[in-house]
Image (cartoon, rainbow, N blue to C red; front, side):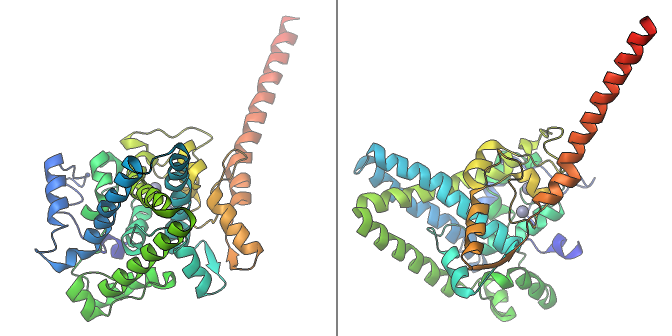
Length: 361
Ligand SMILES: [Zn+2]
Ligand SMILES: [Zn+2]
């Protein structure tokens, strides 16, 4: 726990107040922190969150051309499917289940690279992965980088304000942080490079990977459907990148206890299973908090999990070597247990009624 308490760069308003409760910054404080931590002229160590938001800003011209030059209803359907299902599901498959939770293992580096680049790249792995370990360790407590009790903006701006790694890690702790990223294929900085750049990811390699990914996808989309399709899909990727920043607030009940009995079984945190993120991206978030290392989180019949279908398909064709699946355990330990208890209550009620009737007779 101690390591996860210091691995992230604390915001100026701190994680907790003097009483140990969540420090709730004002909108002004959040915005001030946001722009301070994007300022590359203040320190070059701000480069990674700046790059992440630059990607979002750079999709705006694509979105403009899609809406004002090439708009058609069929392209709108493409944009909808790409931003909601393709990007969302990919985020679950890649950033969440593989990079953070090691829920499955690729046969080799090629299939890892293939899966990583299945979509237009938007979110840097480092920003997602390290902070997400902290999220699981401190869910809904001070220190949780996207603590829903902090409010919408607290979560929406988290990738800049709360998720980057600390800039003052000792060599030992820096190497511990790099180990969280080891299997992802992101080649880490040396400790000396980290002291210079404040990140695990190397700027030159990250910039190169970004350029190649965007270049590849623009060319492929152009050959399929010209600038119209390319602008539509790049614009859609930008919409997703903004939309996904709202998920952590809503996935933990917007700061309220919205957990439902006998449905949201993880009780250690405020996460909830939501229909829309579940269906479009396989994010059954309460199930996920219950079994973070499971490659499947859609455990019940209506809980569609496209990310799991991809992983299972990759396993069937041999490109994924192994995976963890907690469905059986979920049903035995939680779901069926409740069903049996409810049956027992029903039986008891019937027995009570019979006794009452006998007494009347
Ligand atoms: Zn969560
Ligand atoms: Zn997780």
